[in-house]
Amino acid sequence: MTTTGTTTTIALVTGATQGLGLETVRRLAGLGWTVWLGARDLTQGARLADELDGDVRPVQLDVTDEASVTSAARTVEAGSGRLDVLVNNAGIAGTHAGPRETAPDDFLPVFGVNVLGPVRVTHTFLPLLDRSAQPRVVMVSSGLGSLAITNDPSRLESTLHVLVYPSSKAALNMITTQYARSLPGYQVNVVDPGYTGTALNGFTGTQTVQEGTEAVVAAATLEPGAPTGTFTDRAGALPW
Image (cartoon, rainbow, N blue to C red):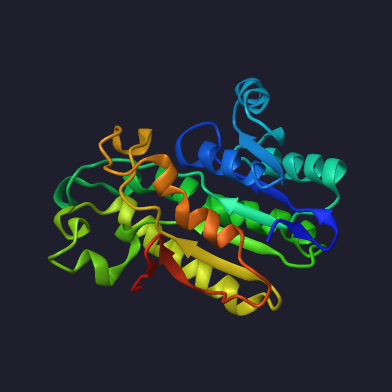
């Protein structure tokens, strides 16, 4: 779906200055949408927006900063009047230390971005999403947030013994299901991009960003009446 009624679909992507976020902006703008490119550094965001085809608009947005998120919502409201699709993409990896070496303070920055960030942005933008004929929220998670996948010996995720990042994505998965149950008329879904070569993993991922954004774009472009509360990758449904 590329329009809501007869008007252009309005989307916002957080953490959109590189990797999956930037590619998501590019692909959604290519559908003829108006896409707000969320960037902590507005100068960088403006430069990237100018380099992309379509109606791409930079907005200063730091998901850890309440004032920044509130200001971003005001900017989107003034420029577009509503929001149809919110893609909560911003995320950080944090420490790669094993469980024995991980300290409580290691969780704080990662949960601040990966868990509280999507909640802060979603909470702030709900009034604009309420104005949409088909509000969609996409949470960008990971197979590392799945209890089933991380305990499956056939999956790469089962070989990574770290506490912080996987637990942040497991929390995000639960948060997504609760939003989906509590927001009638919304489509709130969580996606696993897969092991994609981005700065998050030092570009060691085996997928391209085009492949990594397949699930993100699919969730962002759901038809009316499509399911809510799902967990998918580009191949289909995933176990929680």
